[in-house]
Length: 141
Image 1 (tube, helix red, strand yellow):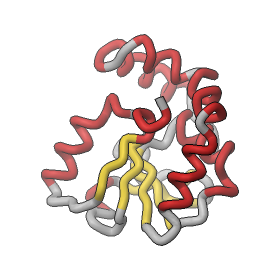
Image 2 (cartoon, helix red, strand yellow; image 1 turned 180 degrees about the vertical axis):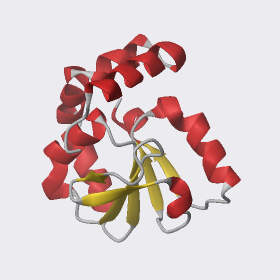
Image 3 (cartoon, one colour; image 1 turned 120 degrees about the vertical axis):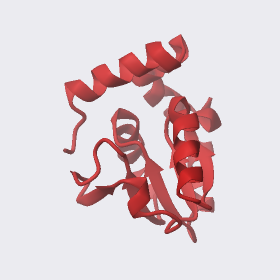
Image 4 (cartoon, one colour; image 1 turned 90 degrees about the horizontal axis):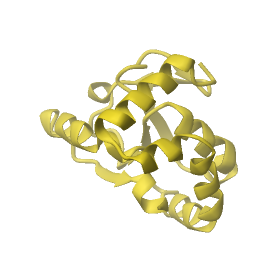
């Protein structure tokens, strides 16, 4: 599961039309990579501030793939992957978890896509999660 499938891309585009904006659609492609490169200093600072934290990347798709590719040398903190639809699969040699499997095991949740924020916060509330939620794509805009 190292790469995102066509189904993942179609699902994301559907979600953009249903819940997002044209900006969200543009960020799915090369624009997300460009924005990350443009804000690489800011991203490196963020990752540096997380060195003593346990972090969960929530959302295993194209955005995570780009983040891992561009900043693999800057991710010097303990981390896991959360994605409800892909739980049980392997990505980058790590098992993808559902949130209920890792409730309160992390200090910070890096939500890679703000379009899912409401759904994710509802899930965190449902399981009485105490993690800090950081909306990554809003940070780099």
